[in-house]
Length: 177
Length: 311
Image (tube, rainbow over all chains, first blue to last red; front, side):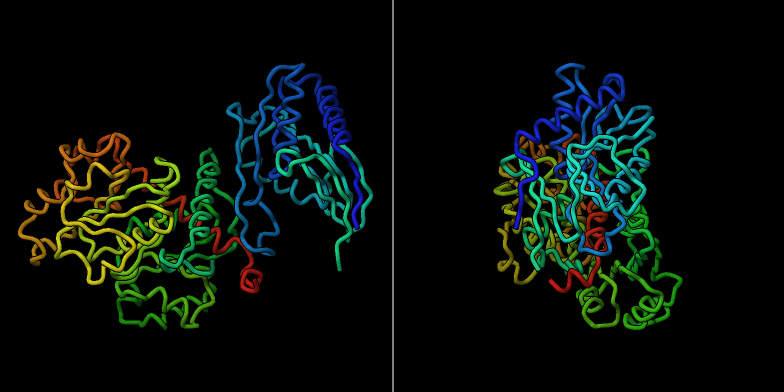
């Protein structure tokens, strides 16, 4: 059982709108650094960066792997690490926008905040997600949301992106068993 | 991966995972705060029955960069020098709650015994056992070569010197062959082990014949005690036939790199000018050793062991 929540066009429009919201909230993109959380936050951050670049000039974009900072490491086998690439401008004194595909428990974002501590001191940290599916376990909220989706725990939200999966789509699936 | 006992045990995928993980460790530690919280609350014991300051320090730094607690047991001035058996030492460490034991021992197979005898529940990392294996050295050598040469498939690696007494050579041959490299061992016939023809490599006694094909050349240390025990006529004779000097360096392809597991005997297996030249990556190997050991400790201790064992 699965249902398409967002088509390719929906994903495109959501990313565009989030891009404008980032500009509006920050009054431009001068101090913005976009950091995608692997894996699918990274292509989303690149798309936002490309969009901001069209009106505001180049915006630093990178990736932040939070595996080494997770609080659930002991609950699963050791995972392969994904790339962390901090733009040469650094994050000190800048506004970091963390970008991820799905916001769920909030634990990934918490780990990302911890990881940022070791990299520098941003002026502010904001959070952009393509899908907010609720069920937070921590006091964390997104600043920019592509789509709010009410879900239950036994459902899963799968985000597919052209860069990683060959097409853009968001699917809600009920887990088997 | 449950333990790291021999390079020969590693599949190509496992070895590549370690090297890729080390690559990420390089990025994560290339900044002001080098410490990661990943192994907070875990205890890593360095159990060194043989002295090896550089290997022990490298493991200690790797564990500390991952926020593990580190305890050093060395032979000198401890119960190890009072004749305590490996088993009793292991039971002591188990009682203290060690999560990983990094062991260096003069007997081949000591790490394997420690891991499989049922004395400890800790993960075991072999940091050199007799003349058998030294897997993290092989991993760091492969990591260093890969950084300079790219993927090792089809690359030619020449390893020169005292293969007979070298655990580094054995581990390197198995790992590099697994990663697709062509390995040639070069040294005096007296310093080749029995059975070397069954290893996945070529064997030669003539260094000059293999210089022009080498993408990387590893010079093994000639230990001082070997120099007087009849394996070769004299140190000078050895250096003349198997030492790497500037003349031989010129015979290598332009992109070839020079490695040495250290500590070096300058003037013996490698001349000072070659050791310090821009194609020598010997100092870089030390830094890479920490990254590779971080990767190994993370992969062994980073997850939950029960889950992994069920798979």
